[in-house]
Length: 147
Image 1 (cartoon, helix red, strand yellow):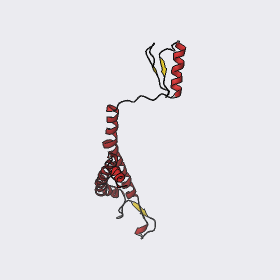
Image 2: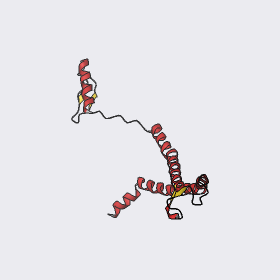
Image 3: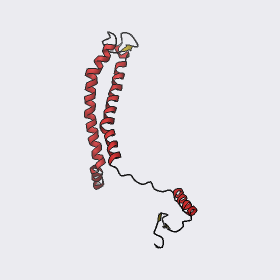
Image 4: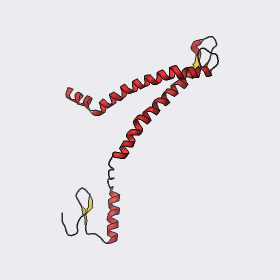
């Protein structure tokens, strides 16, 4: 039981995920500081002279009923900044590297594709040189050879 748990923890994807969570938490702290200290004052300045920020009171004189629109806008800005950094710093370079360096795998032939190839060969009058194995794989062989 402990060996299985150890194997699970030491797999590469679990370690990568742990690193991503730690870096994400640190980056979230940076974005939160940016929006709290720069964006929030700008949003509050757009609002009127209300000391609570950009929003409105549902019941006048009761600060607990304040609807803070500025906080919602700040959360949206936080999300957009984090999503943009994740996309442009992590996702885009990884996808570009995959497209550049990954080898293209051939698509496995379906039964219909194999039957179409057989039909085309038979239509050409070439039944020699086609080999079918027990697992259904077809391929061209040199005429006159047996397998």
